[in-house]
Image (cartoon, rainbow, N blue to C red; front, top):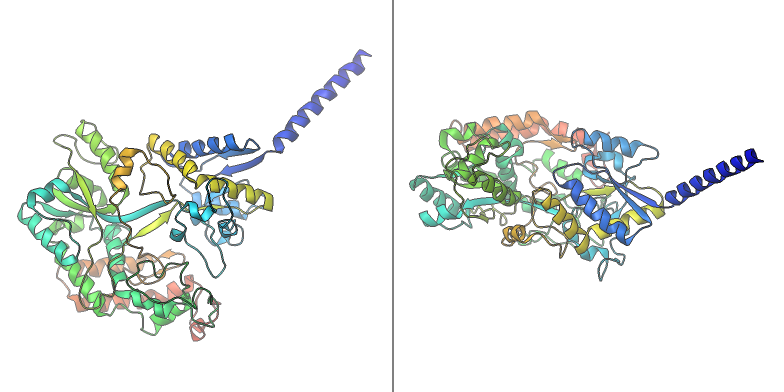
Length: 525
């Protein structure tokens, strides 16, 4: 009898444990597997805790992954039959995520329980990248990055100059700073800078001033595979509107881009490109360190600026928070990791910002824009409908005033550098951070479509073509040092583009045969 009672008790314990497991399994699990960075785990945990307090039926698991090899990890996750991941940085997933990720467009017009309206009204929806051909939005970006000029207000006041609005004014400011004994601009001039750093940014920004009208050639035309009559049928070109060519306003046909390049209609051999590079030569290298310009690496920029030897730097808005943090340490005698300079003699000064001064002259079609993008690229792996709806609800909370304020506060307290103003309406930054961004003005993004494709070398859909970028650096160096003239630069740049155009087309899945019928979707054959 005792034996049977023991067996019965054991069975009851097993059943009880199974029941507990079943109840645990009833909870919806949402797993966050974005890239780890300073403050990111604390930020996600703050949002997860706030969300679970509202939704005890959901378990939000924060399991961030190292940035190293993240692309491979997330691509493998999309290739897995039963992936455990939910929220990821989808920009790292590549083509394998096609058709396997949640389409936020299916939810953005739904009423949100975390605001008084629809989800799309909680954040800057117009800043998001949409694929109108597929009617998809697979990435949600809630942060902003803007490239601008940061300057020493104390030096400007001492010399008696104001932030410039045009490139000619910029040259004049540099002349006065130089005459007063300051290096006007601290900027890297090595290959990395021309490829992916500040000089590469400027090349794209100012090439964009010369190519705005090319959207009339690239745009989807009636009968094209990517033409949408509700979008493209009503769109009209307006160079005075910096957002006129946003992805949600007009479709672009990549086949028409390459056809225009092959036909010589889209070329760097223009009056505008001559204006841009002749203007560059008025400042670089003379006012950017002279003979030291090409030897300056990115690590050498901050010391010149912090020591008040140079008055201006080109950087992202993240520099504002970075400056505050690093200068606080330096002025208290501490060293700063990855900053090769002594703290001795460093004194605090006020900084300001100004946007890209517009170039004027022959071939310039519109005011200057900048590199101004939404970042974050939060996507999610598609599963069953109920689970997808749960993930979308969590994202609604994240992108609400309450949710993103919790994220930003925890991130900042844990040491994250805030890159720029958040795109979530009403999201609250700590007061000392908010004041840094109050004077920033968005002026439009040049990095969209193909208007700046010829700015600094060829690239395909799989990324930059290194050999093309190295050629660009070589002849740009020779032009800026007076070894070749502008016609020589134009000739070598056009030859560079022509040499690597076939490779760019191939990696983009566009063949020469596709160019014969640009209205058809490219086959690559």
